Length: 146
Image (cartoon, rainbow, N blue to C red):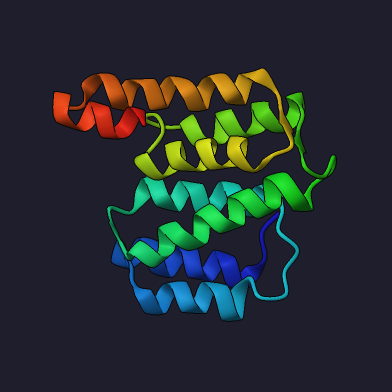
């Protein structure tokens, strides 16, 4: 369940179809500052990433940090992505028309940060990384693969 302030934030963003730097500051400092993150909150923020095309780069940084911190360090089992968390993350990150570039990066960074990770999320993160490499121009493939 999400709180009233986050719901109002989502309504405000969806009305404008923009997430600017000030919105990100409000989200961090006023809305989620002292809130315990939950799957519902992460789901809402990932959905905003999919729904809003005009986003501040700060939003990507904040969402990435929230997702990694929550998934790896704040939810039990700490440091591990078990089958349940992996299934939830894959479902959340791939919803709609598929994962956004940010959702792909989140999956990769969660796998990288976790002490251990269920194969479903590892496979998802690597499959998306392989797709980025195979569709990139030849010169970029060398950079992406390294």
